[in-house]
Image 1 (cartoon, each protein chain N blue to C red):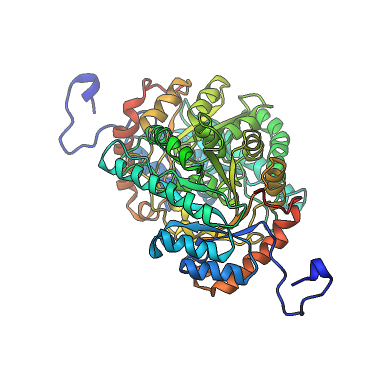
Image 2 (cartoon, rainbow over the protein chains, first blue to last red):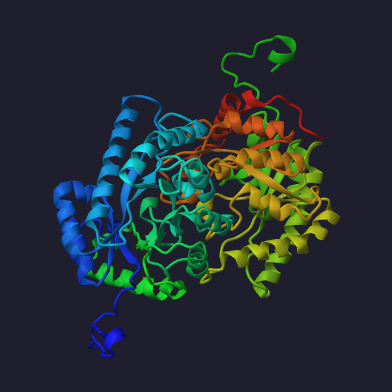
Length: 308
Length: 308
């Protein structure tokens, strides 16, 4: 694989080297164990991976740290914390404890990853509590949760990354629906402690999104850039509606240039939730992810280096 | 039915008189002919109906005008024009001609309706043209279509009402997704010619919506207030996800008070797209619509009179 450096062409059958900033979000191969996901990423020539807590928990944090360190991969984020819209209660206290554990895991896994790893914990806010119609109250409790967790995250050197989710998930997954709202929630805190996730799937429809990407850049809050495509009709389970970049309606040129112009230089995750993709062999999914990223996203990146 | 005015209580079995500002959007009983929809509304004691073009076309405009006039009902709106995101082409010209016909129908039907009828044509913008990823271009063509149609609408005395649709429809139904965006599109035109629809189902999730409802009021652009509820999980066809007010997560108290405070005094439509509702007897649907409106929406209305 020295085509670029040494002029030796790889054999015709060899896949191209994936873009150095591409990170496979592990949810894209949901059924893989942590070891399998790391192996599939390394085998495909990827340099970075976005982790999820569940496969980490499966092997335990200590073993996960060992696996990540020996993979040589960067860690681009850990999914996910959040789900803290419940009113004050034992349930809310349990959610806060869970978030503190997630912060600890983020710090440990990022430290185990290769240089350039990001100690970023993705936060999905949670929906409106069952039986309630108090959306505004649920949002206030997100702000309160950030206030409670920010000092703990700061001590751990972890950046909390608020992820606005598509408004079709506002009732049951995330009462944070726009980038502007996420940035407003982050505003009271240091950018190193509270940032935002820019995910094309969730934000593409928003008439204000490019302005808000620029704002996020000015405020230094882009903690993660995630790409996947939107296509209709939506599947029966709207959680599983995510397509490879280039297979839907999203303008990745415009979006990616905006994120570049905003100064983001970190890894870029491909995070796909889709029944067909989850049913495919991991190696095929990783190869297709790298290929679609190369064609649709990489062409619009001016920078190839990941900020350390 | 003189319980309120004369103190005579209706028999126990009689349904209560529907709220005078309640309008049944005909889509709620989608399979009814125009005559059936008018009859069901009159039989239930409603004073107003929101019409759709298809059942009007079924009988022809002249007969529709006659039926509406003899019903004694107000007409609160006609659904719908729009679908004008295609680039310049024969297809776009055909869409423009269709919109002019819809404007003519709106004027005729509103004139046929009882005093207080509203010559309001609801506009659904249309999605991104097939194969395109140019959302911004599609939105520009909406602005251009309004520029083309506004003089025609003004001559006809019709108010075009831009309806922002939920962002889950942005790719295939409407590239107008927020009330702010609809108001920005309407801004170049007289409020009497271009207004907006405030539909709880489409807008409830938007963190900016109450501010934008107030703005819409200041700018005199609320052409229609439509109520229905959001609940998850979404059905397989997300177009059919609308529930009776009170059966989901929407805060109708806050929303309705905001629309009232913004000065809207017109009819309020209940527009439900739902397979189960469409399968039920019309009279049952109308009765349940009136009952849910009374319990969930009417309590938050300060005014009962419809502006003439």
